[in-house]
Image 1 (cartoon, rainbow, N blue to C red):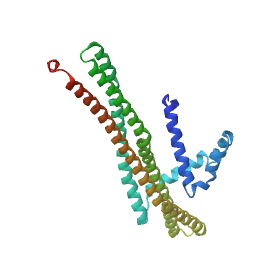
Image 2 (image 1 turned 90 degrees about the vertical axis):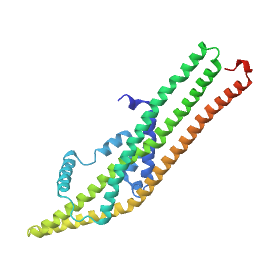
Image 3 (image 1 turned 180 degrees about the horizontal axis):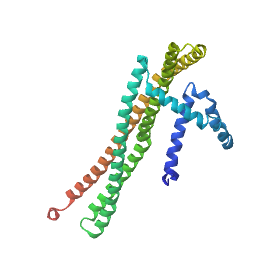
Length: 283
């Protein structure tokens, strides 16, 4: 509750919202959505009144109960292409959730390493004040530790800005996609239920036939929408994840090169000093 008012947290949410809006604007259908237009242009009061125009609580509860009942019944003849989509989403969800957990653990361990390393610089600087003969060397170690700390902090920022949000975004995407597939299956299950009822009922056949026709149209619309977005989504997903990991790899290489150069420079300087000392002063 406290952290959500933190400047860094607010900035992270701002970037995420900006990315989300850009995705909607880039979508060939959603960019023309009236809700999207209202969100971008409406004043605060207008936005609240627009939200109230949605379905009421009882309507939502009714839809949820019907969806649960249909999910218990299941779909009897899902087209093969949507079965393949569902399998892909389930596998992707398992893998991206695992990557998310590992990424979070790496970030946590790196943060703990950074917090610990921050203490070493001042310790060596303080130590140098009490060791006259080792003052230069200990001061050099303290300086190297400070520079490595700065590089580590930049690396942590890179993880929190470039990798973690992208991975977690696709965790949420996988949940959303499974929800989309469930809604598509619910429509087909309802169609199958009505078609089955029509074969056993002689009364109300006209009403059932009309409802079946509407459901057939809804199933076709859902199938068409999924087909239209599926390849587009997979391509965006591959590009985003590839870019995030490539950027992280480049940052890691740069980080280790910086740390290595820092310590190599220090060791070279110490070797030169040692070489210049008179033989009698050398241990």
